[in-house]
Image (cartoon, rainbow, N blue to C red; front, top):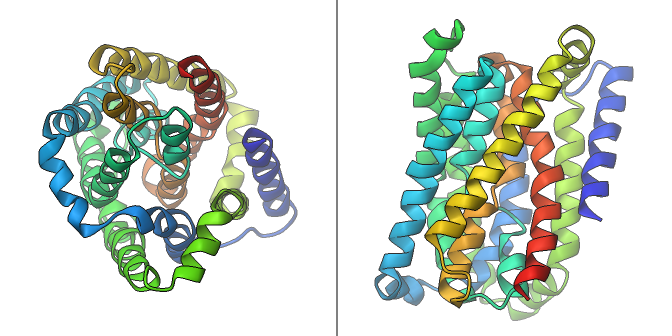
Length: 310
């Protein structure tokens, strides 16, 4: 169902942009994502649960090493092989963004440790600023290899970081601490969270693909169609490598390790798409392609593997 939702949203956005002048990007879309996607997941994060970091320090350490060293290294190797700056940046962005709106659904569905899952979710949200820094450094040190120029200006990641920290970390955290005392509101949001999440993702993807810059995808299809295939090969290789690393690192028969497994195989696709849409001027429109294709790989994989684990 979610795959269909994503495809319809993308087609609707592209159609709107193609027949109009398109929309202008605004960082307020991050605020919308923070309130509708991130804030509801923080209701279950209690400050006293921070002590669980010490209880599960070994698993958390392995998760951080995999998500911020092993997967970025894999993405870097794949990206360099593509010889396209945008595709490489798209794959790398996914490699440093763990979790996402659906990750806790898969944790719960497979009877994994939800308490540890929420701690991992919170840690990865806090580390979004680190993810942006890593993507920025990737661009700085690889632009020469790709023969591209990465402009470090207000239109690049460093100019985007403040908005991301404010809208995706600070506001959702403060809002969740306020609303947590309003039990009826929390119960209502928790009850309809899957619907809220899907509607939010639909609106965000429609908006992003209706942007003026997103219309450049038509030019890629017309003049460089081979990049579409290259993007598919690159993102497929990334997810295969991702799965093998996660399977080798975590014991899925253990509920705690299984939670960390999902936080490795599940990437924050929607946030990556927001970042890519904002960064087209810096990386090129091809950055969007592997991220969009990741919806078609990650969601079916999660559905299949959740049934396998059960």
